Length: 76
Image 1 (spheres, one colour):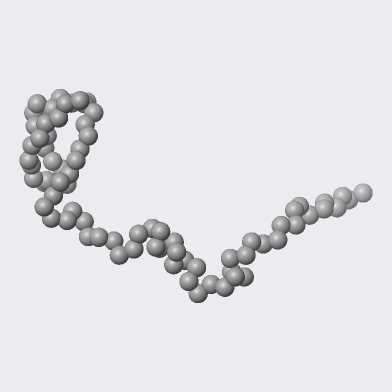
Image 2: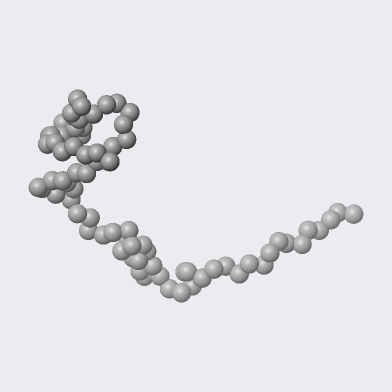
């Protein structure tokens, strides 16, 4: 594995690679920034899913009783 290190500034959500990087080469990109790249989320997915059942009662989450298929009546 080979690595190069360079600094660049993003422009319109893109970065320019050095000319020494040929087209079609698989790259692993690591972004490091002095400032946060995105606002932190107030809730993660686990916390959001945990809040789904707030205010529900047991009857709201019960599974319906499965009676199977109805018996077909044949016209004779």
